[in-house]
Image 1 (cartoon, one colour):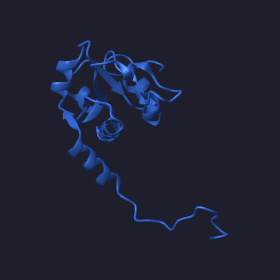
Image 2: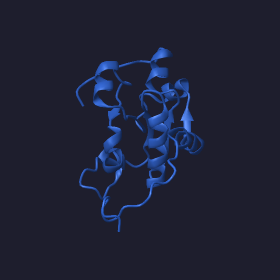
Image 3: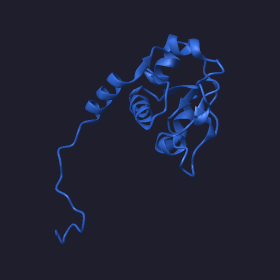
Image 4: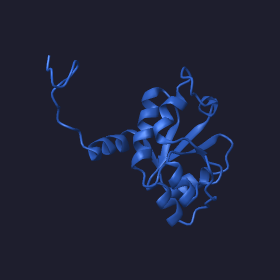
Length: 144
């Protein structure tokens, strides 16, 4: 046992780069262009999920009708066995469209949700930045 580092210490492994993880996620998940995502807006079987931090949402606005699920809580909110589960993630037949600011966090999150068994998950390529740049509708940010 390494007495300086405590029980359970393991030597450092090579760190996988965030870019490699995002590239892997992008290859594994369905990416929607903004115009494709915008065509889904308002459909009762589609839920846009904003995974940005609350400060980003308040500062930049959001996709109209989006559900705010901060990235740090997403897995707990999706898991029906977790005490923090949010029922919105258990609605049968729902298509989930995730977005963040630039499309990287949402790609990682979409891949994670697929790995958890949530079906019909995609994300918006370029994120909310691309959404706004395309002139897609934006609702005022609110306190989540």
